Image (tube, rainbow, N blue to C red; front, side, top):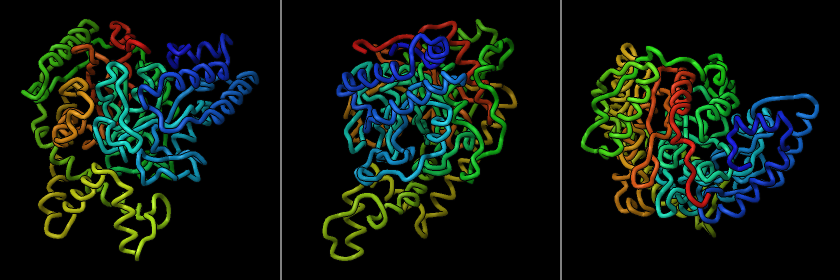
Length: 483
């Protein structure tokens, strides 16, 4: 049962081959047996899962149907879940039980999805390796000595190890697509505003976006269908109709114009990954796509711009965690200043502290114009590059990451080296565009992803291309040994 995709589970439940309760028990037992190797979960919600599974079975018995009705999933542990710990991977929120459900959680629960638990993540979503979590590093099921990517590494590792068919993640600079690439999954960052951020604990508000992680594009389409839609509670949510993503999967790729940016194939890219990316291009050409070389001239400025804007927003967003209202509070503070200093100093880990300090500096008087304002101007230039490119092509294709998954701890002493792993993904967040990573092969036994980018609200186009590619390749069907 654990090998079934979301789509296969939906068909199995509809045909009464098994019940949601049976499936949930199998997966909970599998998590208990295998997750100690991976550390992919922070909290398991067995009682809630069995209760939701029984309710889903009852709804099906009464004639209801739906692709997510009775389907087991997990949520990245920054989506608020009522009455359940929502920690954000941090000591700061280790004792926080959310008093309400995030919109994404509520929408998926209403669709009948069964929540098995909350997955591990980089602390406050800050990281590319899932090593900054207060609850310890997550291991990559393809090689337990390597990172799974971050910050949605817990969701990615759990799905890749077949502990469950799909999970939610969030993507601020590549945190869905990068772990998807490093664990052989399909991961989708929707257009900014497509999925509600209400109840999603913020890292950088103008960049964060929730999305699905699954083994196939077909499964991502199913999960995104349940997550997407306008939310009046979120001021950044966009009131745009949500198409039937599953219905659009089978469109022909004949004549589809795919742009390959020359800037992607620079010295920083592992040449073996470059070969796999070009092999995926050849596969899409066989399906009728037309390939064109394009240019994104301002891509070189993306990392410095991102690592000014994101920490600036983080320093503002995380100011609420002060030891006063909720979350961690230091022991026996001498006065209010001591309360603030020690609660934040003890509650936040080193990576979060580093980014808060960088952000506060960039926003400070005398440096705002030199750093933050300049970064926002570069952000606009990057968006303009994409708009010009999409006048010529329908999709942009390239690598998701410059390297395969690195060893645990290998980049801990050099944070900038880890930041450079986001070089291909952060531009989509700066521009607010949808992006998808799909499996494209292996280097030294570790998975490699190919990234697709599309114009605003063209998630369906990304899913269509990925689905057609997956019908003609088998990379996405490979399973890590031992799982």
